[in-house]
Length: 201
Image 1 (cartoon, one colour):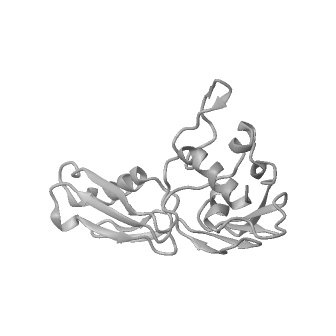
Image 2 (cartoon, helix red, strand yellow):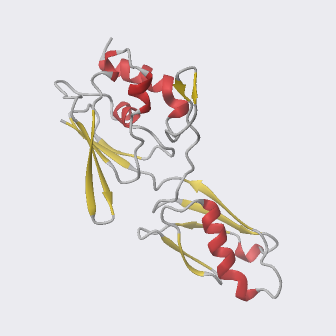
C-alpha cells in the first residue's frame, strides 16, 4: 500500500484523538485522551457578547502581537488564553463602567484561522496549512500530500518557537507508516502548535 494511503488510513483511525491531550485514563490497555481546550492565536476571530449591551457585541480579530481592543475595556491580551480567560479580562476592564455587577460576557471562537503550521522538505505538497483544529504530526504529513520519494521518516523534525527560543522536536514516523502502529506509537505523536514547522528530510 502506498505511504500516502497508509498515512491517510492511520490518520482516519486516530482523528477523534488528534486534538486531545495525552493525559487521559487507560482503558483496556489503550489511553483514552481528554479533549484539548483551544487556546487563542494571533489571527483568530472572536465573537464577544456583553448581555443586554448591543453596543458591546462585536467580532474582533486578534492582532499579530496577540492583543485586541475592546470598547471601554481597552487593550486585551488574548495570546494562548482560553475564551473563559478573556471573558474574565473583559469583565474586569468593564467594572469601572457599571455601578452594579457587570453583565455576563461571553467569548467564542468564530474562526480558528490563527492556528497555522508549515510542512517542508520531502513531501508531495509542501506549504502552510490552517486546519481549524489541533492536528498531530502524522495528520500534518497527510495534509501535505504524504511523504515524497526517499523521504527519511525516521528523522522528522518539528521546529517550535517559544518566545525567543527555537526548539527542535525529533519524531520517528517510519514505524507508524509501516501499517501496524502500536498504541504507544500513536500516543507519542506530538500535537502541532501554531507557528510550528515540520521538516521531512
